[in-house]
Length: 116
Image (cartoon, rainbow, N blue to C red):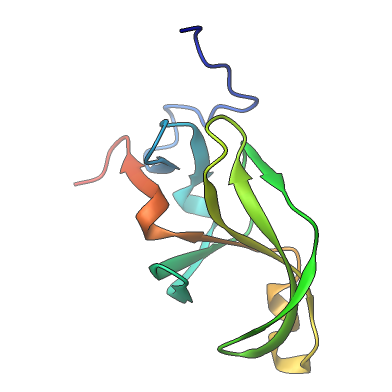
């Protein structure tokens, strides 16, 4: 089995980061966390401003808890696990802040480096 290569590493100087629970690829710095108040298909989920080491699927319209959105599933670029989704378009004015942001479900990430 070959060594996995990641596109981006979040520095150890970043005291708290989130990684893929399946392969430990770095996903996001705690500094990029916007909200912990989201719901995914498998339970609790977090909203992030920026994530790394992901690939996006095709956008599709879905009715979510907060209305109609165009979203694209996001996958870990290393192990290909579906992690959550990216908000491409929010059709309601009150939801526009989500556009370009990412949801990662807690079931697919682990906290690493400096959590107490």
